[in-house]
Length: 318
Image (cartoon, rainbow, N blue to C red; front, top):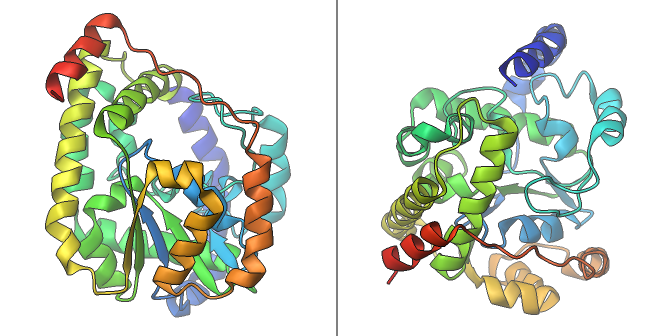
């Protein structure tokens, strides 16, 4: 896996140089919106589904799979990346059988990981040290990462923003970066999703084990260790959100329950548009309803942990 990542990176590098050369001036003067809609909340709390629905709005720009695979070269390779990715992508995500494609929206942490090691993806690559990387790159940060986040957001807007009127960002790690985001985007509007902790922790523990096997550069931890690490990180992320929540100005936050999103997605989206004053609901409604209809056949896989891991999870959350 390390060899494959290195080889693919080297293949793209010349195009990254060209992108820097050709777009440097536009990057410096790029005025991306200062009021992005930012989807946050713990992983496996419905953030991906909400992102899909928000991104279905024809007026919304967002990071998509064919951009996040190589953001440092995506402006140069824009005519190429999407058709290439369409040929090589599996029909469903290998971690949870959710259907996906090159055009589907993607969490910006995935694209940021192409630009810096200071992301949550470092803990996915090195699962034996997940908590250390989580504390380093999610709960804490650096001025360099802040500038890289702004750079990535500008790239996203240059790549996707033509003819759009708002930007959608989805990143569960941003749940702990509210102060940073408000510093960069003072009018940022947040959608915070919440789910029963035991359900989101159980689901994420399973996903992280699969990711460790797919892209990890270390052997996966035991199922028991995975549950303990995931539960600890969950609590720390929620504590970070609770500390930062008062910083969000009135009218720039809406909190959504996972069950409400899943059971009444269209009504929930209308509530979000109204609460955050996202313009264009009447024109967005049809496209969002079509995206909801597209996903009605999806059946979530059962999440089953090893008996010892499940017992430990129950004990941690009792």
